[in-house]
Image (cartoon, rainbow, N blue to C red; front, side):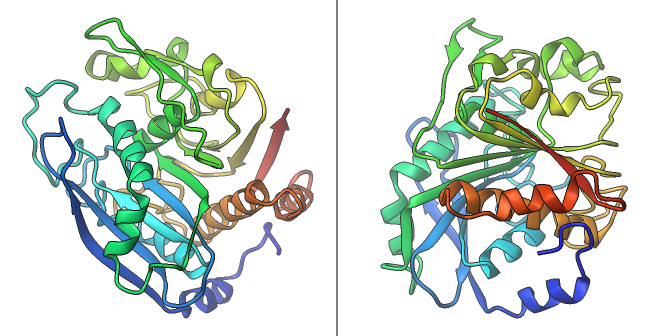
Length: 320
């Protein structure tokens, strides 16, 4: 697998793998303001399918930050033999919940609860999707989150958050997840020096030192938004401020949407680049495969094809 120069024709071959999508799966959740709506995508055939829970970001769009978004990631992983479960978190603009509600607008704690609820009800969710029963390997479940979704996955990896409203420490560590992937997650409180610190104080309330479960942090080296921080690579803090085992994938030239991971032809991104999207997906796939199976060398192979290689699209650091 050549991680330095991914070819669009290879992505086209992957997209020819038939996949199915079923939505919405609607589940009532106690204490939630609305029912939990989920989309499930999977290959049309095959067995022993591992699972990915995909947590969307906050974002300005109405539907990209919902179960309707992130088509490039969803289609890629479904074609690679994964079941993708996408919840619509309560922060989604598609739900139009009042900003006066507790935890609005981010609904940060309930997002982690959504992911745990899905884990608790995997059997029910799988049984709802026609043709999926008996095809899923529930021992292999990963979580991937982008932006605010990255913060959600950080909580599932053990990052504790002090509730700004109550002072209570929230720990949502989820060892049932075999892999945690944070894409463009917010960094540490010290570098959170933009005006959004006033609007989203909870993003300054996380403690990466408690994030002890293994995780991959994906950072774009051009992902700088002065509304959040003027610190270079602030969104890599989850790697540097947490204990191992951790891995850091730095994507060269990537801004916050990493070439367009949140949707096809989405103008939400200012660095639209299908090759970069493919690279991010391929790299995460390598990490997840090697995390699920210690004998799988995909992640080690990715390091060899990136680190120190002229023209590589990124680099990888690791710590135990």
